[in-house]
Image (cartoon, rainbow, N blue to C red):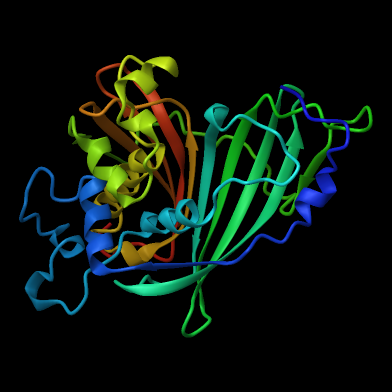
Length: 306
């Protein structure tokens, strides 16, 4: 599949997407936390009970920072005017989350989407989608999400010899994070459950690739795979536990590059390197000795006990 000759990438970049209202409750926050493994090994884990229960009489359920990724996936349907592609060939390559304010346990949000990057790679197109999420009542910016998607078969639309390339953030190119060769500062091992994808999908991603064995086989997998954003939730939860001493409000930014699939039931090993206020991490599947995720988390401060 290639693009039609009349496709104008500049029209896509300037397209005004409709604003979308998204509301969530404490139940949604709790369901998400369970979906990314909170309290899975210990139902009364003192580090994580606050994500699923009003621990010690706390007034509100605490929200994991990666919950922000749901705002983007819930409000953008990947309808890209003029750009022809097969949605079955869409790959989620990277995710960036920028947190401006701690998330309330329930709120109504106004989401504003725009194209922040478009690159012609010949046989594929890279599309970067930015979604700003505002608290509807106050108008305050809560967070930004930027998703990098690879659309196989959607390239070839450049009108000149130079491949078309646009970025709203030219000083932040799409690139891999350099993982140090030194020993990690800390390592955390966690087990996903065989039903992990079935639980995580209740947070809003109902792609049958994660639940239907037939669809998974058509896509080239032996069985349904775990959502990449679920794996990210496991990794950042490990960083909050090990580096932030359980304080999710220390997280400012999250960047992730999805490298390989995870099968529900596999063991995740997250390695972390502390570089000032940045935690560089990579997550591996223990059973296959393969790296599935890498990136960084920027912190507002360091825990006093480090």
